[in-house]
Length: 288
Image (cartoon, rainbow, N blue to C red; front, side, top):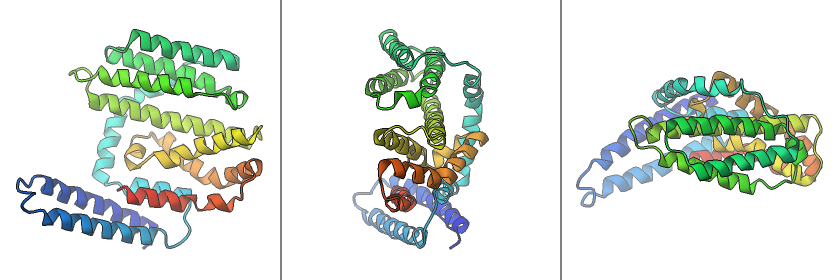
């Protein structure tokens, strides 16, 4: 099958699969009639295996991976998610207008850490405080990214842990008509998408500018470049703005050249990484 035909077929299969699965879940006598569920799972595995065979029939690119994820998601689901994202995009667009701090690398991390610690002490009680947290965190994160090459080798474990705990506080503040859990999840998903692309963009710039100082830094850059390609599925991509979508596909197109440069610093045989698109496709299709 041509790649666009395969993606359309995967989308149609997912739509049908969801309908059959929903019907089976409504069966109140599922224990007495377990065979429909067994048949469904067996057929599902068989179809998934065939899609994997078709997808891996020849070498694929990172762009191919993204296309299958995006276009292999049912159109109705993509459109619904896109409409949900449009309501939140003005908030995220406003974050781009906030100037970053002109801190030294050490000051940038210290300011970031103090903000997270303060948020954990103060808490997040409602939607207004949650959005204020996102607004302040965005500025601090971009201030850190501006110093990324100089912070090579610096542990971010403390900031990562505190950020996760702050996001948990936000989720615990939901459950009200004015701030539902579904709305919080959309905000956090769009924040994560934005974060992954910002990270990858900063790393790609560092690679292109030749600012690789050590194998450890190159390894970290490789991981951050791979994260959007690995972590975003079709649902996540449906929440992207047109500019973010172009940035994601641009990252995919530039990955082979970036990997060549990174392998030189890491001492890797680049053939070890050339099969990565195939691995990403296997993971994606096996988890549908």
